[in-house]
Length: 324
Length: 291
View 1 (cartoon, each protein chain N blue to C red):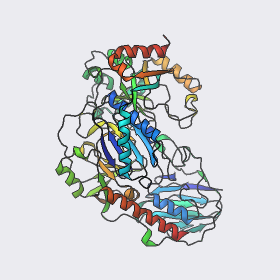
View 2: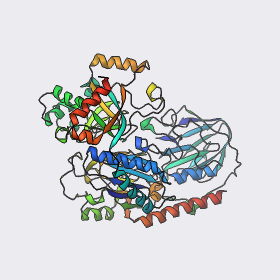
View 3: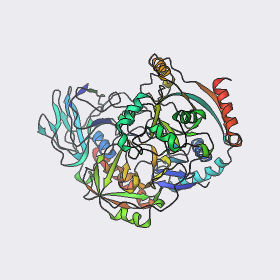
View 4: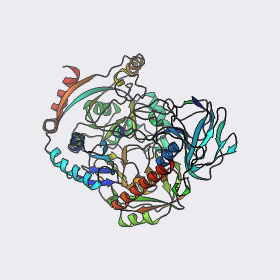
């Protein structure tokens, strides 16, 4: 059984929970930017949480079904339609053979996750179906989805209730301004005290360069560096370091002007200093930020980071319970 | 050298062995990451050596970040006693310097370069005190290189030349990164060479191109059948200048599935190297070319 792609929106890629273990070779873990949304969509249609679905940014695809299936759309508020009839997000619905799933205009958030009963079963690569386009890995022959593609589906064994839905209280999206919690560290000491406090005081805006590799931010004051003689091999700019690894979520600020937060398809290393790292609990949120949105970075310590991680895990547990 | 430990959020520990690049710092990074791998610490998900630093990713639900930190610091004491000897391989990488494809690309991005009137390699030769590009190529291809990091994107090696610091080539990156770089471009930034594994953005100066595939997601290249990435940290590389004819012949071999890189297993001792760099490099060449 397959789903036929009529149109692919701006960028639609096959994603699961990624391929950890190859970052030391420059192959990032990839996978859904908003993991909670993908897991939830999968649970709604009776799939394993890590089954492969579609991630679409800003604009939804048009998909023609060749067999009856259960579908769920989670993440951004990008209302689904079946043969033009509206359906709810965060809710399981049926699409019958011959019907077309399409989408209305984006109301909030940035990325939707479309789970289809049985899951997408394109070939696994290094343990994952996630699309890593830069390295031509996973997805459809190493690339995003295109019109004309036929996406293979697995067989669904679990019966699901049409209309099964996630309560509103458990749907997480960014506030306005969005808040991203940051643990300072890495090369934090390279910034002057003034720059350290400015970074957290200023309100930043999401720039247009915002994708699976990373999100760029603009509008805050330029960051000043503690003066030093640049180390051998680091490069002349004070924001340069001897090329090193980049953590997922790390915040680099080339020349001190525009912070970039690396995401699931991160470059694994390079020569820019990093001032800290967005905590793991807030990584999903970044995937739902639209260009031009206001964002505040909030300074936290490790204890808060771990508590937030637990809180996120508890929300996922609640979703599992509601949908079981 | 005293390593600096710092958290990268709640899932990473980043260890800076030294602010400066040196083979000593690289060896500490390599032996530490080997020690972490051998220790099989529960919860570790990624072990990433870099030039003069390394990074460990872990699952904080399995091991508390503070405990992970303690484990790493404990391993540092053990790794420091390592004898800095490496069983590795030396690989010959043919390079067509000043090729037409990187030339076309560099001409398209002249406004992002420090010296728009010169090519990348002319600029690099001049600021490093070489009176001709030929002599610069002799230096770049003369002494071998250590693969000191694999990353940025898919299997891209960073290489550090095995010469005294006074002979190290140093070149700044482009003023603003290019949006395009041909696949298999041999580049240079700071004190590192690199080989671009895939086409894409890049900020390193472009000196030439190799016909040798180093990344193959389809794994159709015979020597990449077992794994899609060719290089790993600790590999030693010797660049061999080739001309257009040799380049075309090598490409034809690649297309016929007959190209095999010249590779020999070697043992490298950092203390022997430091005692006699030219002598050690000469022995490596003997091993590579069966002399």
